[in-house]
Amino acid sequence: MKAKEVFDRCQSDDQLPNADIVIGADTIVVKDGHVLEKPKDATDAIRMLTQLSGTTHQALTGVQIFSKAPNGEVEKINFVEITDVTFKKLDLETIKAYVDSGEPFDKAGAYGIQGNASAFVDSIKGDYWNVVGLPRNRLCSELSKLCRP
View 1: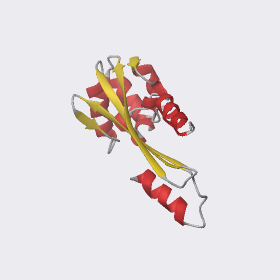
View 2: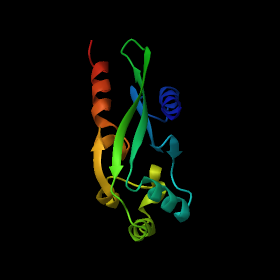
View 3: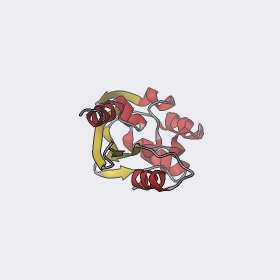
């Protein structure tokens, strides 16, 4: 919905550039069928990280691309990229120190793989950039399709 709103505004608002492509993306973390969004507070972050400790979860990023073709037609592409992330077993002291750093509060699942939480990761299966928040490999593939005649 965000991408559509921005695309439409760029087409109709003279104060904004007339964008031919707008990309929107949002990432969530899922553990055992439960969505772990951004933590509400330190207690919530500790709960999430404790739940992820020593287990595998999924990072899912939903992407929507709006593109205006030279003939004026608008094309919409949607996809969801899924990456499995396995955390090492974390002790409560480590979790609390990470939460005290402030890093987990604006991140789904209460961690950022590109930051200090990279030390928590035992392995990933899939696109690292998807866990960061934008599945660049799939995005580039989808964008390249728009450039073909």
